[in-house]
Length: 233
Image 1 (cartoon, one colour):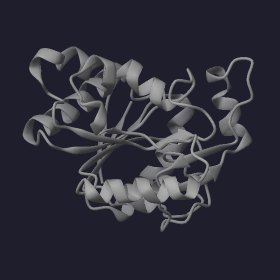
Image 2: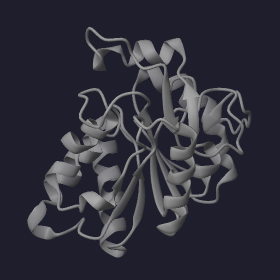
Image 3: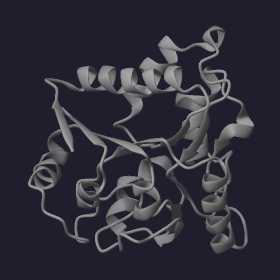
Image 4: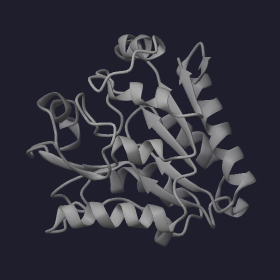
């Protein structure tokens, strides 16, 4: 695990964007695992600024998002589908057919999870996956106690997670379930970059740095991977 520390969030975002852009320029058909949340916003902003439509950076790139809420459509303003369109997809020349996000509206969520795993495999597997870090060590929607053998599945959202995302659902009930890539799915990526910034993440960052490995701290599974870079501010 390679650790790189930055003096501020802007510097972290610049480095993350440089890794992102370098990867797609070296491998134009790369398969990416992409996160949502506040931490990657700076990275996406810089990628969009650098890689506008005329550069054709994303023409053959394939993306798989880490997770999505169950029970809401792609058009819902609180969906991660809407988030990704707003921060990245609508601003670059990516083929919409190459952008993959779990469909939380289907009746058979288990079948949707199985389909998502098959689609990742059919694309050749994840080559580079970006992650955020939850204050309790969660990665994607894999909360403490998640088996490291887990694959894409339906999860019950904790009350703390629902409260943290309540701003996305003003006047509505926050979804109680989500579809998420499992820890084993994430670890199958050939390369992983974890972004962590802010005082609220400090305890989680230090726990990860300690090298402790426990299912009670999902991010510690990353110590099992051969190519992880952690960017910290």
